[in-house]
Length: 522
Image (tube, rainbow, N blue to C red; front, side, top):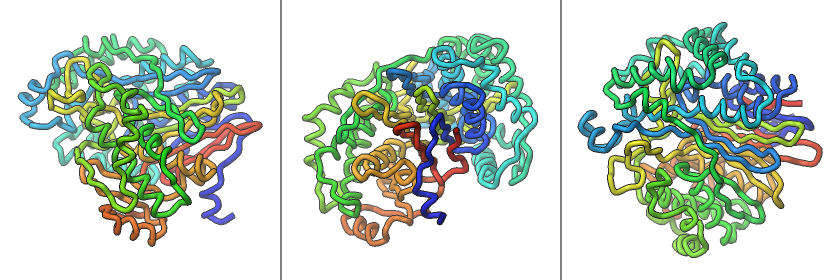
């Protein structure tokens, strides 16, 4: 089989499947399915393993969101809040910055992943936390060998934080190269403590106290009381119809609204066959959705315009009418941090399907590490603004705009697919492109994931396109006025997507060749 065919053919699994961006995590999830665990058990086994083997993307100091099909849809929002003392004035005064800091103590909101793991396990799982964490604990204690790709991320992260005078990450992980065995005994201590004492050890015990103390030493506002106050939430997903498929996305503060808005705009257009005309329409629809996201999205309690208004027919029609099929329109720029994330999905023999995303945001996160517990603290709060008139302004107990959007699609009320991607601002853009390929063109999950993608930078407006798109199409987009940059195909930049599609007799799944993971099941 040629490589090109391998990249375009989804794998079929009759009984269950796991798709993740790292082969060790995929193997951990598949082993959990084989041992009798269900899709949630497998998802957590894989996610906890990712927290050990890809600490430059996700882990025990980040946030988590998930959608689960188990006869109906349940959506969980594990997004942490800003400290009670965090205001725009306080951040400006303490940091000396006019805009929200990207690194350091101020963008650290209370990590929501740990509460999410236990909440999902209690509601849907069949195994104990110690059982689903066993593989992660093994790799934390005994170590794992860094791959060439992984070593690049370790080195890049260490260099970034050293440049910012945040030495925690580099001091611990040191000089990593391909083949380096990485052991994390302090993180193993955290895993053992969680297995024996549960989430209270993290939020209302010694781990939470250590997190607050580390942030306080760095000049931040978080206290142990802030950590103890964390609570995730079950939320109602947003819905939109696209060509007869019911697409489900997470509600604010995540950018699921943007993916649905882009799809709704496109649903009223003649997309034709794939080519420069269609790619132009996709880019223009995504630009409009990102502009509305940047203007209106934030903590749902602070948003003056509800998502239902933005997804309503009249709003969508007004946006659609601004598209010129022959010319790129201006894009309102709003620079913002981009991040490091993992997306993964699972399905089991009984029909449970899980779409899960977990993140540190900017690689290993804020640059702060709780050394005695081996936890790298995320910086999801770097997406906050210091503009008091904007719904995404930082404030006590507020959640920041989130790029994380695990997704699901239904046909006739039954699950059709779980899907998603990492990639920060590119996530809603990738959702749009994957669904167009799968629903309009009939591509299977692997073909849609492997196809060339574009990513619009909200800070510059540049459209980065992978070089395996037809060169003539790229030239035609530039002639329409798009600021086009071409990048090497199958690299990390366009995000790492995965999808599991329900089919007769089982599942077919696709995993992104831009990562080192894959699908596995039985």
